[in-house]
Amino acid sequence: MSVELEDPELWRKANSEWHGLALRSGLFSEASPLFLVAVKGSDVDSVEWRWVRVKLLDDWDIIGAGAASGILGNGFCRPSFVMLSLDGDAILRCDVGQESIDFSVVREPYRAQTLRRHGEWMTGSPRVDELTRAAIMRWLDSRS
Image 1: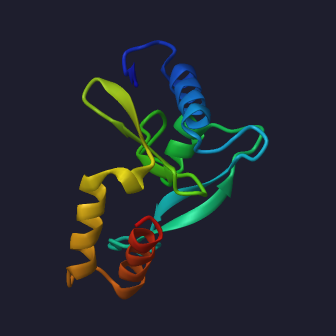
Image 2 (image 1 turned 30 degrees about the vertical axis):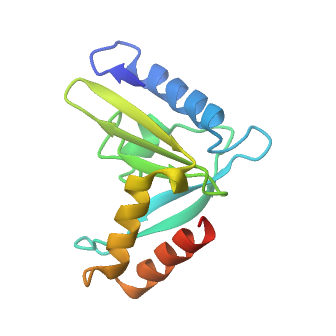
């Protein structure tokens, strides 16, 4: 899914697309709007990411204020984020391309052999810290 950057309704449409996709994919439900967001470490030079549990508030604005905060993007209507359902069954990613804000979803990511192979590779990489390595191994083992 995508929304053209030149669309005069960009902010409204992109927020609407994100919300609809999040619900349809199982990122969260209306009854339980809880999910995880990948957040970069607090150090400016940090390459470490971690999952943070969040709750969608009634007055949400992911594409505008969320992206402008620097946590979910690089400025107003310039989102860049990865979100994960609490059960690990849906990953939702958003980024800005040359002409559009692009959304993608992977359902049941543990079934995606490319992701599994990448996880396996990461567990053997000296560049991956022990905490991340342990989390990847738990994920791989839990979905064997």
